[in-house]
Length: 185
Image (cartoon, rainbow, N blue to C red; front, top):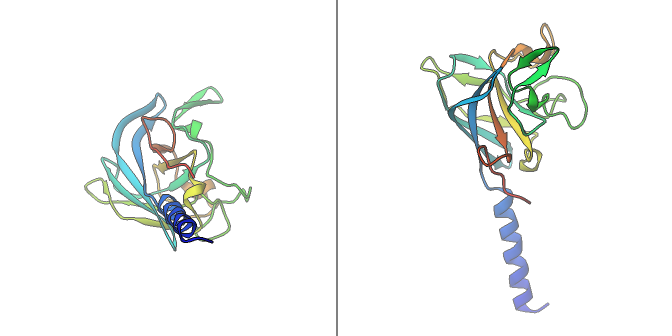
């Protein structure tokens, strides 16, 4: 192999790694039964050797713990369910490519999209990062990121899907131009 070819090969490998580890910024908006509302900030997703880190910069949310998940579809619109419009139902369910059909711990065997709960302080601000050890950047393309009204006990008991309740904030990952952009691999 000549030196020029080896240099080109090395440069390609470094470039591929740089793309794989590029951060993603996901704009986040309030959602209700009428659709997508005002911006509440963003979440930056970074890939590490330990999994993905989701770093929120959100304001105007109710204080406390909130369910936080990657959902299966790249949409945040309201959708009809049994004659009633449901906020962000177009996002589908929690991302579950293995069809576990089980809500669980972010490091367990449940939905791959199950993230640690999002903490919102008394001022309505969320800035504490969370780690999703099983997720990779490639898992996020064409998905959405969701914040639920209530906390998340990472189980299906006593309430389904951790008891997080209604969807209140949503952002599309790699979706429309008004939402996030994701590098293509």
